[in-house]
Length: 275
Ligand code: FES
Image (cartoon, rainbow, N blue to C red; front, side):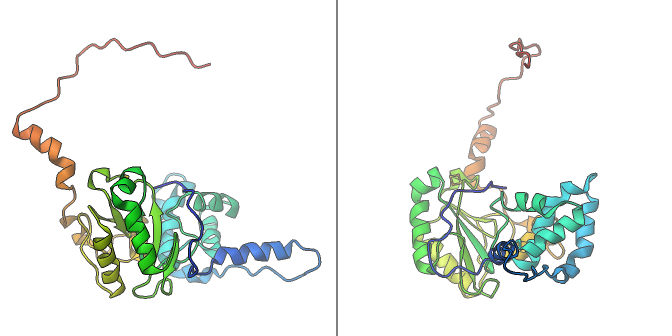
């Protein structure tokens, strides 16, 4: 999971409405003495369908608060982002304050504050991928989709809608430039191949990732990140490691290379005392 990045908040004009902004505005209005307008309570009934799953997530941990990260993924599988209602739901399930849940939900970039498209396209623009063409890929997709960072082309959640984002290193530097769709890898990309990929997604197709599980949609991927894989039994059947990644290990095996054994007794430097 990546931490919150310092990317520009808006580069285009077609971003979806921010449900949290409404809540923040409501707070601001409520704190103004001249108005007595009540703050609308988030409608928790939207999460009725996941209450049983939420209980299963909480039951996995000795301390309920440890379930917060998968629980946030679970609420994203319903709304496509973490709304004020989702924050209140998590707080209620875990007996935390909404401030505690908000602090976590706003720290990690995988928790979205605006509803995502049917697909989330994350382009690695970290140093190595950027040098190899990641910046060009991002620029091409930005132009093709008409959106910027964390903005959605189309109606969020509707078929063919796509949310675009910059991503920090996606841990596939040997295969750069890479991008992910709903966190599945598409390796060794070019502006042309990436454009073909998003056009296929817009047509409702699900191109096969280079490795990993078959493509699904963002909400289904969020359900899996919460630990629910119903109907996805075949997901582990596809290729996992890329040939480039295991090339060193293959060469070593072919040539019978081994690492020198660890000596039995090693003189380790003294550990300085903690002050
Ligand atoms: S820099 Fe792109 S995967 Fe590491």
